[in-house]
Image (tube, rainbow, N blue to C red; front, side, top):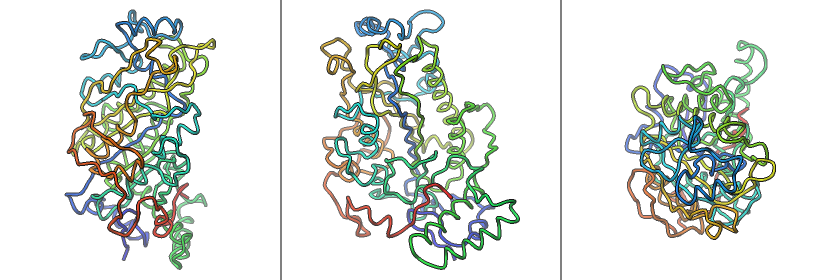
Length: 457
């Protein structure tokens, strides 16, 4: 008989996995309906997106400061490629090629947090990304990611999970460092044993499973888990996925990855957190004037993909957007002033986008202003909202996990911005010992319990 760990894949015979093909997975993944069925997607825009051009000032004194230092890159306020205007805010606009995001905003499903960031200054891509993903700004020695610590400390996860965490792409991000139960998946069609036709792969897979089940070392467990992952993906994810009528994903890697996510959400495998990256936001040169050029292209891809995902998951019953929260962030922003190569240099404060069916749409956070004396070091948008404050609200109100002292050690003074709906559980800052004996800060239990499936076999 197969056993199902509290936060792990099915462990055991592939025949039992195959037997589930004709049944609904959610009868296993959510056997206790009172437990948390929320899904958090963390979308990381690697390279530092230019928040000034994604959401430009369109009125007031800040518009004048913006125009003065961006003679070529500025988003116009008049003409066919002018900034899109928010129905409830006339100080800021949206990039003209982000109309799909505006549709989400108008539906109350998009919240924008302005002037958010790490709270400590670091303009190195690698350090800033690591600080953001580890959840410990200023400390690169942390041995686990903030999402890993969330999964370890969450008090209300279902007892029976098939797939708690997913990293869409080639690598597991640092936010899931220390979590050996994460499934890495980029392309479902290549997530298999490439040893010829199915008739030959099947007996080989059975032989491998017998080999891996013959022992209990980390290698045996990891190999068995990788085979289980293959079985699950073959049963639930179709590379030729056809979304609901009226939903069109962008023809890009990003669009393809979102289709994979949509299928796994619909399969109800107990997915709790997923990560996805989009690179290419480091626009030092040839960024593109106004609505055109490279930046406009990538903004359009981002906008189309997010709109398609929400439209897909809202179609049918249940409405999965009522369980899904998407947070979109970058390691830092860009300088206000354009450079001599019609690009922008590394900056400081930036926007964070939060999307989902339980979002309080609108613009949130304290805007510091763009006058020279208001800019950080005279060049950058200042940070008025610690990014951990945004993530903490998602964890508490949507994921029902108040253990901020474990997830973001050293962070305190949390108060909600009102970005999402949910219950305000009192934040817990002091270290605790979990009911299974695991102490906060000790991630060794991962290697003691379940082997890794990174790379997916």
